[in-house]
Amino acid sequence: MAKIVVDVMLKPEILDPQGNAVASALPRLGFSFAKSVRQGKRFEIEVEGEPTAAQLAEVEKAAEVLLSNPVIENFVVRVEK
Amino acid sequence: MRVGVITFPGTLDDRDAARAVVAGGAEAVALWHADADLKSVDAVILPGGFSYGDYLRCGAISRFAPVMNLVIEAAGKGMPVLGICNGFQVLCESHLLPGALTRNSDLHFLCRDQEIEIVNNTTAWTSSYKAGEKIVIPLKNGEGSFQCDDSTLAMLEGEGRIIARYVGQNPNGSRNLIAGITNERGNVVGLMPHPEHAIDELTGPTAQGLGFFTSILNAMVK
Image (cartoon, rainbow over all chains, first blue to last red; front, side, top):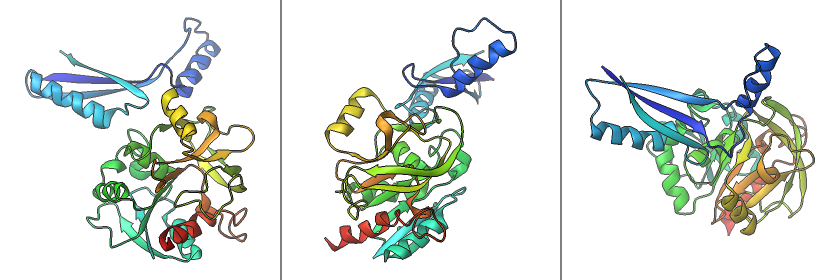
């Protein structure tokens, strides 16, 4: 069974208050590595067998219509083995 | 005249919106998200709340409710539609209005009485106000920060499509203090604060929200 993953992130120019809150919490816990943090969403979609090109095209369409809001978000579709 | 008030699963403010419609002088008609007809209403209100639990994004699931297909079609033909708070989010997700509403810049859920300025009084929902009139109505939201790209913002400003702005400090990070916008035709209005909670001084901070619900009568008489 393969998994199609859709990662949805706020566009770089859109303020991400949640990511900022995480970024400011990290140093309070002693983690000093983060210059900045952006928070997004990940969708894992299971399909039977290997995903076909047609399925991937459908997922792309669904990502554009439902899973993301193109006004504020970008998305990436990929297959995870 | 008949004004429909839609209830989605998770809607909170449908009762107050219906009460405000009646106070404004119209008949309130309850509509359900799964309805396949608009029951001959002359206008529609999408009230506030947390439709479908705000899952995915605020308004993202509601946009595909059966009743919304009818609302989108009717709005395209000029029927007045007012989206308040969550209703505003649904209108943006439906692409009836541009832009999107995102998490308040300080992450806090806000609930307070907010002064706003009515900057466009030529829409179906704002004609009872004077241009530049300042009113105080409740603001209560977690995701009320209006965002859009620079060209959309310039278009909204240039075409006078911002109908209301926050007065004073920006409560949620909205671009250009935007509290409400309209579409090109002026029949669809989205507003983040809640006029339906300010229709009389017994239950609200003021009665200054009532103008949204009397405006719609003016629009129909024309």
